[in-house]
Length: 275
Image (cartoon, rainbow, N blue to C red; front, top):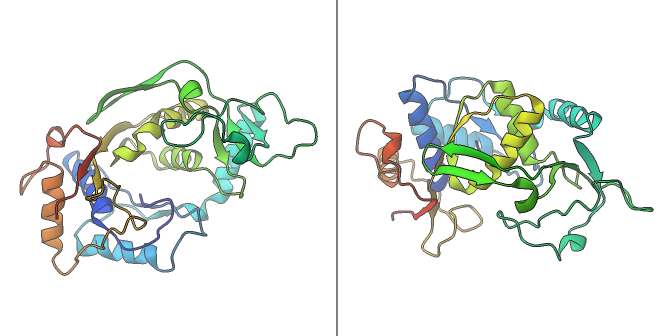
């Protein structure tokens, strides 16, 4: 998956997650799916998605079904929102970022939502976003790399956003609906998304979706300890020598030159990328 919107060429951090998911799918004789999570159109760059797909082809990473493009599925996400709202599971929220500044930080760096609008909007307030009701019971899952993970979503995150104030569908909703509709059985992705998983499991249960098996690979960091991304100056892959880039990613994932063994992936959340 390439998100929150394709904003530039494929870099090493994205290759690590792509290669790990590809090799795990092939080892299991499954299908490898590619998804363009392009809902944030303000951030998307022209031709970035096509450039990423061409890079995957150059690297020999062939997908097994048509590429799913989230911006073409807005009606489906709206239908899921309507269902959750009709069942009283989602509710309108009028809170601004400034009004949430005094809340404690959640595990993902956002503010913990304390349920200000859970029982209705204050007089004179207009809805800005839609949030999902959470509960205090722990949600746990066995990650194939990171081990047992448990989170109390209500206390550690709070009721989370399904529809943003700018009208963009929230990541958590879109990814759960897509996984459900595509019949995803296994998710292999970067450990930067590990703390989102309990939220997604909560939403899966509400929508009657199957919970996939999860494996979160270490995130690639630069020398400053920042996640590799376009924002942190990650350089594009050198596609003149794709085999060298693939070998570098395999070493990062603890693998030899051939084969694939998920058990050999380092059981940490982040590692500095090799030069």
